[in-house]
Length: 83
Image: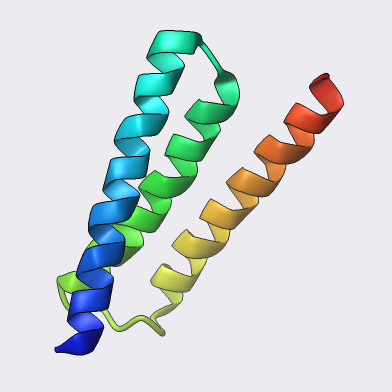
């Protein structure tokens, strides 16, 4: 039960970050916010999959989360080189 509560909380917060990322991009046209939103979409998907019964150790969950981190790493490197 505690694990599900934590995953549910993470799901809600990642979803909020996705919405805020798109909102900031729409308002300010900051591309980094779009990458943050994309990253957290992937995290949201992984949390949703766990809530729906996929074990957190499943390879698909690990790949989705790894892709999320790689998107964020790419975005930060891109931003650092851009300015």
